[in-house]
Image 1: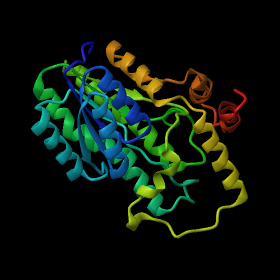
Image 2: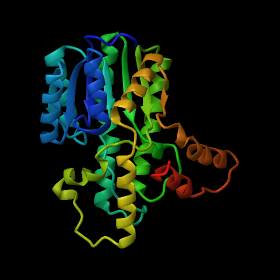
Image 3: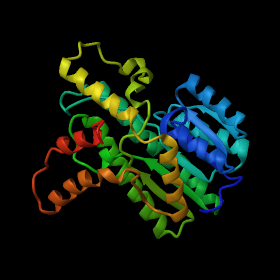
Image 4: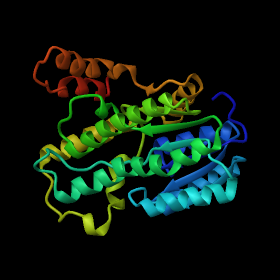
Length: 290
């Protein structure tokens, strides 16, 4: 897809971070934009800002973990704009720890949003796009965590690997049917987002009992927050995404500095060696000195 003007984009997780960066780029390209997010306050703020910038924008409060919400999002999109050409399944959260230490609530919440959210988007929107018989593109947001050895945040890593597998399956099956719907998977590294604060959106019934945070965990959280603040601006990620859409590139890796960590896993897998903890290489990437 090379001509974007006048087409319709649907973006989940659009109220902040990568989703908002993509929305801003969409408006700049002349697309009509549907913003979907669970964060009503920031969603309204994003809608106002994009409309002020001259965009044609519809905001729909959406919990992607609920199929009914995503089905409503599709209906609202078609009722308002008649078609959908770009779908960004971007909403995501992070929680948990080691696989046995992450609570049942952690597992359920992260899987519901990060994996079921993408499944819902794919199941609801792909048939609509196919039926349009016109150029369309789906971008599913995974992470470098979906291409590397998992560790400290088990639920997040598991869902991001699953999103890569889902996207590959979607890409290949659409290609086999000569569909005009194309697919990409976005695997960013450190981006200036608010993912560290997504806990406030966790459903009440899936919240954990409060427990004191150890000094080690506090230090790790502070280091991660500092690294995020130095991360790639969302608009820069959006530029890489749109370049990939135009060139019909499946894998979108905006952070080439992570290639070493990805290569570490791939090489050891092909040599049938046991996994190696990538923490040292990742800490170098998170260092303020880089």
